[in-house]
Length: 301
Ligand SMILES: O=C[C@H](O)[C@H](O)[C@H](O)COP(=O)(O)O
Image 1 (spheres, helix red, strand yellow):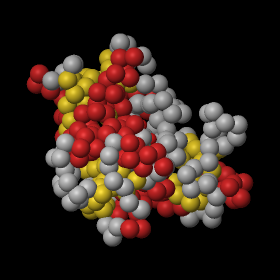
Image 2 (image 1 turned 180 degrees about the horizontal axis):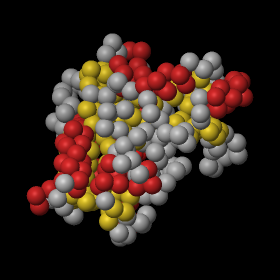
Image 3 (image 1 turned 90 degrees about the vertical axis):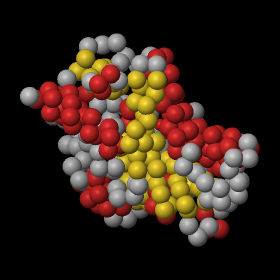
Image 4 (image 1 turned 90 degrees about the horizontal axis):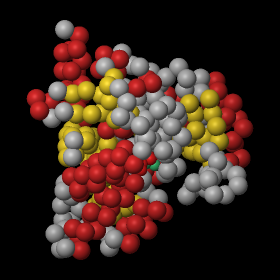
């Protein structure tokens, strides 16, 4: 473990202290380190090793369990994408198979979530077959304290936004590594683009202050092609994203853009998982923010 980092630095927006994960990280990796007794809290940088991975896995599992605990029999459930949501799909299947949840139908945002649902015994239907979704749970690449998200690390953000925004309740599952002071701190903004429009879209993204890069496939030559048949451009904003809602709209106004990964004004609640020594604590984003605020005050007096 490296040296502790002051909360003041965090509150002052030192982006080098913020968090990253495996997909195209911009900065180094750090975790929030909580000391439960009296909730004295410090932030420590943690080197990227197995422990970090284990901590994240335990956090994701705790989040999945808590989120699925909100599902009631007879509900239509929106399934998220990514590793955290996959664990939630597994948990949902477990409760269905144990007979604890009945008459559940689910709507998956992408191919992978539908396959997983089938694998774990969760019945899926087409989005067009349901009038509404009772509850959706989803992961995120970043979340800020205003419940704005950055999504699309798995290139599934377009359909995920449709599902999240039509759900009566949209719950976001975020381990501590996902919480940032400002969106765009650790990840670029993924933009799904119609392939024939790629060049003009790239030029327009530059005029918005972005640095665009076409996402390449890892085990295939050439670009990532989404489930919807489009390309993904990852756009970094070196000057930061001051107004997520405005940038979300501006990017979507570019002809040829299908959808971008900023999600503003959609989320009902965010669950944050904190590693507390050997335990994982799941709390609301508001509780997490309060702790950050109190600690910042305590450090400045
Ligand atoms: O397109 C992918 C989604 O935004 C995922 O929800 C996001 O990448 C989070 O994934 P994970 O739960 O694996 O961290």
